[in-house]
Length: 263
Image (cartoon, rainbow, N blue to C red; front, side, top):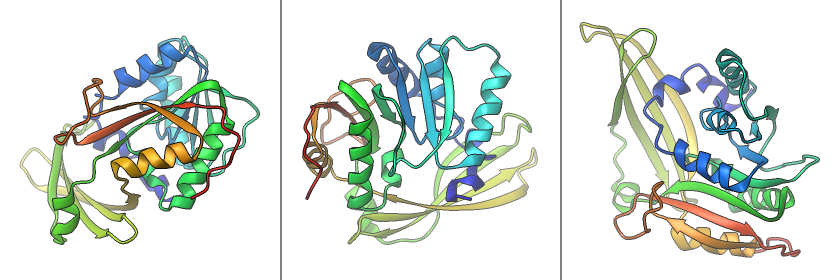
């Protein structure tokens, strides 16, 4: 059992609003021609649309329960234009008998790697599984210095969303602690389910950790691991990265560098 198994039955409705990255990754997949490897595919939120666009995609996730949901969703859709397969695996220890034109890690999945050693191991695995000239594309958030140094542990409202089955309103709160020495965020998400009268009928707590990464830290890490950064965007519409950006979208090419990543 992994930390994210307990998210399997919650993820799709808590993050029902998260749709803005799908066109971006579908377009990247189309341009690559496939096959595509998605790391941290979860419930297939991105992998399934990529396959529906006619591109072969392999989704990898460490959570067996997440993959069960992904398979169920794909089966419910019926015939899908592109080949779609699921693999239970760890992005830190990739070992597959094929290579890919594109590797994607959508929606901050790379931040689940909680140390430089884990990041390096993942990037070495990605490099080994990319075709020459193949691309790695992933997005992460820009660390907000005011937030990470503020120090409050009071819950902060994140968003509301409507449960697609019950019609109940879900109120999502964030209660995070920051270890700024190790750059690790200890996230607690509090999910309140409200009925039509506004009464809380269920309240859930889910904990996980992320390691935030600064802009030039990410760039240097990629270059040290044998990648050439060809683009970094400030949003999923290919906007420029500047001081107002809240996201970083990295596009790096496998440069064919044989040396291992060392710091």
